[in-house]
Structures are given as C-alpha cells and as structure tokens.
Amino acid sequence: MRHRLLAVVCVAASLLTACGVLPEGGTDRRTVTVWLMKGSASKDFLKRFTADFERRHGDLRLDIRIQEWTGIGEKVQAALKREDKGAPDVIEVGNTQVAQYVDGGGLSDLTLESMRDWGMNDWLPGLAEPGRFNTRQFGIPWYAANRVVIYRKDLFARAGVKQPPKTRDEWLADTERLNSSGNQGIYLAGQDWYTLAGFIWDEGGDLAKKASAGTWEGTLQTPAALRGMDFYRRLQALGKGPVDADEEHPPQAGVFAKGRVAQLVAVPGLAQAIERANPALKGKLGFFPVPGRTAAEPGAVFTGGSDLVVPKNTNDRPGATAVVAALAGATWQTELARTMSYVPNKTTLAGAVAGDEGVAAMAAGAAQGRATPSSPQWAAVEADNPIKAYMTKVLAGSDPTTEARRASDRITRALAEEGE
Image (tube, rainbow, N blue to C red):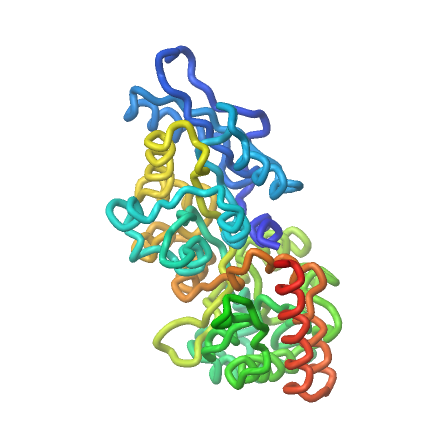
C-alpha cells in the first residue's frame, strides 16, 4: 500500500534503472553499498548526492543500487542474513515495513546517533514511530507523503465557500453547501480505510493496540474509534461514493475528472492524473490539509514514506551511518523534497516546500501523521482487510458497535495467528 500511495506523488523524472552510481577511480576508498527503491529519487538527485558525498568523505565510495518494490521484503530479509561482504550497508524500507525487519533481529540500533546527531525530536511521527521499538531507534526517517483534500476552487467560489475549512464541523457544513446543483460535495469511497484511520486517531483511538502480555488486539470497538467511524459516515454520506468499494474501484481520479465533484481525499500528485483526464480543470484545483477537530492543528493522517536502516551485518558501520546522516540531513532533505515533491523528514524543514501548495498542505498534515500499528504481522491484516468490510456494513446501516467488535476480533486473530 505504501508504494501505491507514493507512486502518484513522484514528479515526472528520469529514474535510475541500472544498478550503481559509481565514480571513476578511487580504488583506495572503502565502498558503501546502498539499496534505494525505484522511484524514490531521480537520477539527477543521486548523481549530485554521490558527487557531494564522495567529495566530503575522501575515504568512501558509494555503490547505489536501485531495487524494485515487487518481492523486496524477501530480498531484504535474505540480505539481512548474509555473512559475506556483498550485503548492503544501508537499505531504504517502507516506514511500515521496519517492524518485520526488527522482529527478525537483523537491524542495527541507531538510537545513539539519533539522539546525539540527527535531531530525532523534530522527526515526523509517522516516520519515526514505526522505526522505534522499546525506545530504541532502528529506522531513520527519510521522506514522507500523505493525503490532503484536493478541491475545485471554482465550485467553492460558486457555493460561497470563501476559504477552505479549518475544522471538521466547518468541513461538514461546507461540504453540504457544495452538495447542490448536481454536484457531489465530496467523493469518498466507503472503504477508504486509511482516511478513516486518521479520524480514529484524531479521536484518541487506534486500529489495534499492544496488550500487556505483548500480544496485539484490535480496538475498533472503543468509544474513540467509534466516534471516528461516525464522522466518516457523516462525511461520506455527503457524496455518492460506493459503500462497498475503495478509492481505486473505480479510480477516484477518473470520477473527479468528470467535473461534478467538489472534493476528494488523496495525495496531491493525483491532481496531475485528474488534469490529464480533464485538461479543462487545469488551474482550478487547490489543496488543503484534512481538517482537525479544532482549528489549532490539522487532522491526523496516515503517513506513507521511507525509513533508512543499517543492517547488523554491515562491514562498515561508520560509512553506513555517514550515508544515513547525509541523506537524512537538512541539505539533502531539502533537495529531495523540492526535487521529488515529498515532505521532508522533520517538521522544522516544512518551509522547504512552502512554495508548492499541494506539498505544503501535505507537510502541514504530516506533523500530525501516524502509521499503521507497528506489529510485524500487520501485513496479515491488510491481506484480507476486515476494516473495509466493517466500514461497508456500517455505511449500509448495520450496528457500528457490533460490527466493530467483529472486525476487531478478526484483527486480533490475524495478528496472533501470523505471530505463532
């Protein structure tokens, strides 16, 4: 799910498809092997980064190898178990994938560097928290992307909505005003569970929690989680999104492009797909953060993105941490964010994307971002997602508490069964 989220964020760029960004000469240097994922950084960015890094670190040489998302989990697990010198020294992993690699015992503890040198107190929570286990930091935030509200500026003006809403109550009221003259105030599919998760987090709830015995339990039946679902129900009812499908069935960009929808919740990059499908909408789209319960801060959102990890079996920990420090540092964070339209890894760097309306809206929301529960077995939940079925049943009129308990039981069983 994480790579689908980011795929529509990447700006059009020539991507590195061959293995390696290697300089000439430098045979007396130690080589640091870095695995990065396809689409995370442009070829030009990697060339510039490599040249600058090797200039500043005369004893190191970079071997950057681009990996495909398909099958990456198994490939990383195998690399973490290697005992020869061919293992990577730094690996980019999805923020929600860190848990499974920590569970296997293959990652280095980077807490000391994080506390001393890397400014961990300013990291985006949606990237930092999934990389932290029992107060130890294994995953270092690299970049993020998250959902915002994409809206039609012309339809807002026509309905007399002068500025984007700042609170949930304003959002409901404005959406109801927009839901007229044949237009949908919002298009929100019934099974958009990542958007639901944000509303649940805003209310103080969660999808699952770690119990005292160390096991995980589904928590959709808690009062806070039920309040989040109730807000989702009220908002979804102001449009014509299908209650039994997610945002990709049908693709919501195509629905929006037909010209009768005022808002949808998506990553900003989806605006490009909308404009390609309907060029008449170019210049008419705007962005704002998902509103929160109060105007003090935006709503919580699911944060997708990447962390950088250092395997325990690295042959050059100093070299590996030097690469992580550079990639996660302010200079190259700023360059990456501006090049790829990402959110930087620290709240203090949000100003780097202030000139891009969509990315700036993402950055505002990312400060309240979260990730899915950090159980190494969470992928088992998503494989046959009970949250989607729960949402459909509630939106179709079933009792929320009853259906939430059933979904939570399925989440608990999935996490327990996969962990055995």
